Amino acid sequence: MERFIQVLVDGIATGSIYAAVALALVLIFRSTGIVNFAQGEMAMFSTFVAWGLYEAGLPLGLAVLTTLALSFVAGMVIERVLIRHFEGGDVLTLVIVTLGLFILLNSLAGWIWGFGNRGFPSLFSDDTVVVGGVTLSVESLGIVAVLLGVVGLLFLLFQRTKVGLAMRAAALNPDSSALVGVRVGHMLMLGWGLAAVLGALAGVLVAPRLFLDVNLMGAVLIYAFAAAALGGFDSPIGAVVGGWVIGVSENLAGTYVDFIGADLKILVPLVIIFVVLLFRPAGLFGTREVARA
Amino acid sequence: MSNRRVRTAMVLGLAAAAVAVPFLFGPYRVGQFTLVLVYAVAVLGLNLLVGYSGQISLGHGAFFALGAYTAALLIEKASVPHLLSVPAAGVVCFAAGFLFGVPALRLHGLYLALVTLGLAIALPQLIKRFDGLTEGTQGLTVDQPVAPGWLGLADDQFLYLLSLALAAVMFLLAWNMTRGQLGRAVRAVRDREIAASTLGVNLAATKTRVFAVSAAYAGVAGAMYVFAIGFVAPEAFTLTISFAFLAAIVVGGLATISGALFGALFIEFVPVYASDVDVALTGVIYGGVLIAFMWLLPEGAAGLPRRLRALAARRHRAAEEKTQEGRLTQREGVA
Figure (cartoon, chains in turn yellow, purple):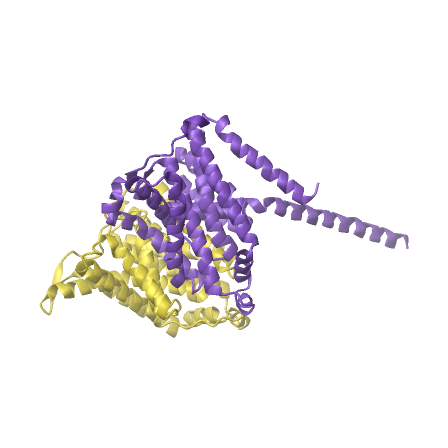
């Protein structure tokens, strides 16, 4: 039983990381209708920057904060310089462009930092705490706490501030928002900046659990896609719940189903995406799409 | 000369050049050109899907791998003759593509991209997992086709010409298909999905068929790859190969048959020269090229002549308007 709860909590912790990336995907999808295939690689790049700053002698916390700020700016620049040109284009073009960004960032990181892997320090201590008779790692609890904090901040931003309101308006109806004075372009940039921050955060949280290399986020991106598909691509709550479900089921399957083991864990999200698409294409919390000619 | 005759002359010229290749170059170059043909078939298959039907697959490397392993296992473990393994690989991949496509294609094109990307990431793991059959990371060595003595050809020349023949068959089939009922239905679905369905095109069935055909092309290319290399291992079928195929169709030109050849040349020769500079350069070029082509030349290299003609026509028109304007002002001046 204790083992089961440990696996469960660990699953929620990993799931929180997937949820962060899924939230980033949802944020961009809601405002621009783009599924950003490069989200994971942007996060990987940020994580390398954090590692570089840390190696250069910055304390870890400061290195991470600096990285988040840099990621915010970089995300806005990517939207303004690259994505803006293609906005409103067909799905095929946008997938190819974000995928191009995916490959470009992956290879650039390899060029700059090499293809080898390295350890990444954790933001949390490696202690354990006993909660209700079950030994849990501080790291797992810390990751969940960070995610909940981020979700809370996002909620405040979108529901309680004027900028958040403008962002929601710009996503819902760009033309009308522009008419009432919302700078729609700025809101899109802001969305990409926030998404980049979420991704960077996920990267820094996941790197200590894996090794930091250029393929750090490859699998995480697939899990995040599964989380977003499960929760619904336009639902932030769905992204979080989806992330947790994916994280927990992945960990349970990896631990208790011998055939799957560590190698085939990657198939779990694929199967989940398939099942969701077959039975509830809009996801659990998503809005159903209506096709119009 | 009419347009049609120009095209016929170009095709014949290309065919003659293709047949001449093994007699002009050394074995190493011929081997590279053999791989170009292999990639051309896979790229053509992907282009049938992406270019003509507007569906996106990021995981054609997986079907390429499935075809390669099917052929390798049939040849090595079941002693099936080489040439028979090609249609077998095609049929297996057709079936796999069909099964995969049935659920994935009912929905938005985006989801297909997601699932196929997942497939491409998961596939090397799957190959390793079934190491009893696939020998895992060690890989399988496969006997390559040997030139029959009476032909008087070296093995590399024979291998090239065999690949050329197979590729020619696949290109002809594709050319026929794009102009037949399936091709028209597919284009209709791509351009106006809802309109096509009201005209009686069965969307799901059409998409699934194209996906399966496209997978079969990748499978045939996989079998040809086994002939060309004589070895299969999971490392050959990572995400990189799927991305390379996608880069190839964008460079060559979406929805063009000839573009597959440009694209295949691109993905065979760019890594050869790029890796001299840095191992990462190939990826930088692929990524940069995807973005740059979508920005500047969405029709790809095959669209370049058309683009230039349009540009020239516009220049011409603009110049004509200018002279006309000049004449008008002159006349006003007289009045």
